Image: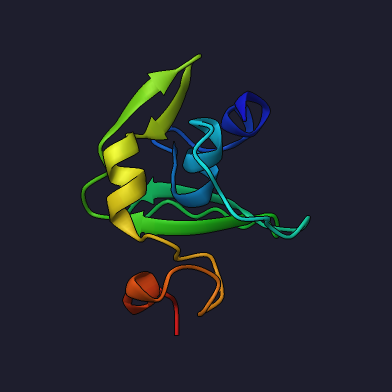
Length: 100
C-alpha cells in the first residue's frame, strides 16, 4: 500500500475493501483483479486501471498507519458495506447497499 501511496496525489485516502484488508477485517474471497479503492479531494484526477476513485467534498475520516492515510474502521465498515461485492454475495440484510 505504501508503494501506491507514493504514486498517488496528496490527500489520497485508502477506502472500502482496500481499507478493510489493511485492517485485516474478514472479507469474502475477492477477484485477483479487484481494484484498489481510494478517495481523493474534488478536482483531483487519478486515472489508473487498477484504481477505483471516489471524490468527496469532505474527506472520509482517516488516520495514518505507517505513513499511509487509511479510512477509519468505522468509516470503512459503515460507509458502503459490501459495496464492491455482487448482489447476493453477502447477507441479504446488506443488499440495500450493493451497487446496482
